[in-house]
Length: 86
Image 1 (cartoon, rainbow, N blue to C red):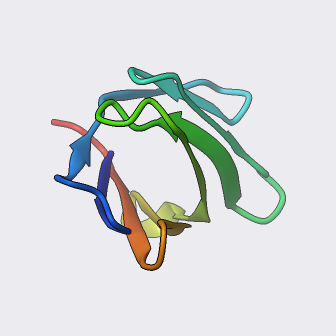
Image 2 (cartoon, rainbow, N blue to C red; image 1 turned 30 degrees about the vertical axis):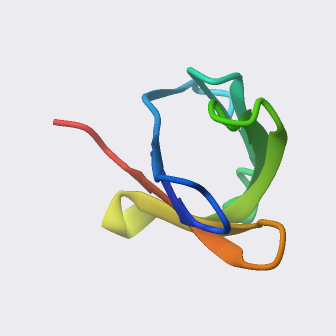
């Protein structure tokens, strides 16, 4: 998972694990829930630089094996990208 923009001092790259129940967890207290009916995800992560919580939302693109979304920084929006590993 990669977070960019949104007033981040530098991008946040995070490993994540997807469970069968739609929960995505990972380092930096990453916690996302995927609504399996419509593919929308919501959740949060802790910014390791500031220790503040960042709220995330987006959608899973199952056929493309990826997910994308956004978050809001102080005065800029940022991008969330989740891609399958090797």
